[in-house]
Image (cartoon, rainbow, N blue to C red; front, side, top):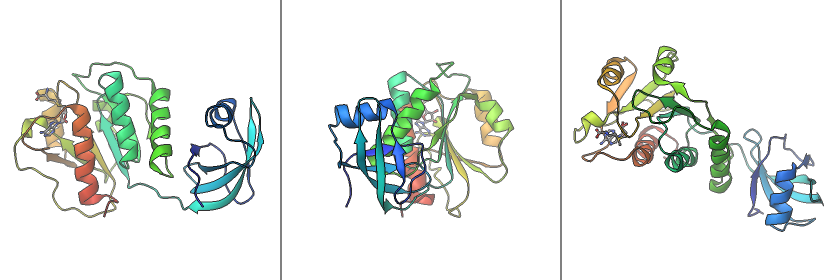
Length: 241
Ligand code: SAM
């Protein structure tokens, strides 16, 4: 049996396990969703899969749920980092939501030379990733990292991780992701509204782990490019097949 409401909790889940709710969670379940004692809900914590739970106690400031049955095993996404330059607030929120839904394992906002924003609200973006996982049936929530300079991320690049570099200078070219072994660590990089600087582009193209790709014959907005790149990668190398 599956419950309609899904909630991410930072709490171990298992047969008979009691889960104590925070004030916000209690408000959402009992105030907004009108659940009462005996009501059912699906819980996940990014580690133990999804569990059907029942409301054992419901209060204004808290409550207790009891785990009844595991309804899904943990499904980890492929080892894919999603790097993007933050743009306007609503569009950045959209990018984080889509990256979480589409199966990125880690979401990494990066500051490039032409990035408009110098800071992000990491906690807000993380909450968007949680909400996306709750609504898409995922059992895993990608971590949203703090904003880091792209140069710094490239300086510390881990050995063995490939990079799909979405380069707007290749618009209309035939450069696509070549066949590669599945199951390897990868990353995708999408630039800001202003694109990459010549210096950044020269560095990226020369990296031995970079795979330069075109996303077709038109320049896409950064949020569209994010979805297109994730689709392309998931189709070729991810867990869609
Ligand atoms: N202002 C830039 C220009 O006119 O060339 C466009 C930047 S685009 C709005 C934002 C990002 O989306 C780019 O940095 C790139 O990563 C990605 N992108 C958009 N269209 C693309 C395409 N056709 N091929 C490869 N990457 C693309």
